[in-house]
Length: 90
Image (cartoon, rainbow, N blue to C red; front, side, top):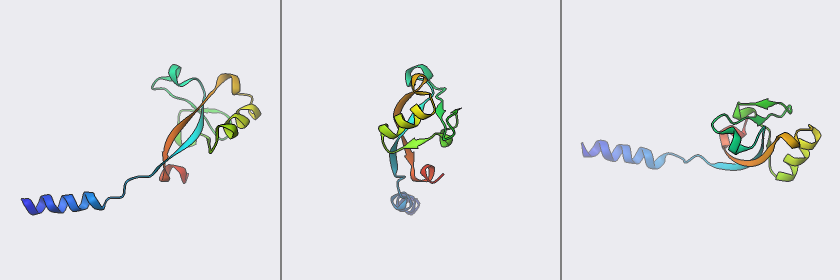
């Protein structure tokens, strides 16, 4: 029984933690209003509930610029979300 525990412990120690990186996203409405039904602005400038389709930015200035170009600044809020390396590849 102890050897099973040791093997499981070694497997868990060898697992790489997922790296998360913050990116700015544009929410289609304020986070407080959205609750669990968060909507993001996609790279096409349309609302989406699919997080992987959200437009992601390195800075809030870039997110503001995109929102201005898409004429959505009044109906949107900008915030940060954590994305894993795998999510950022798509």
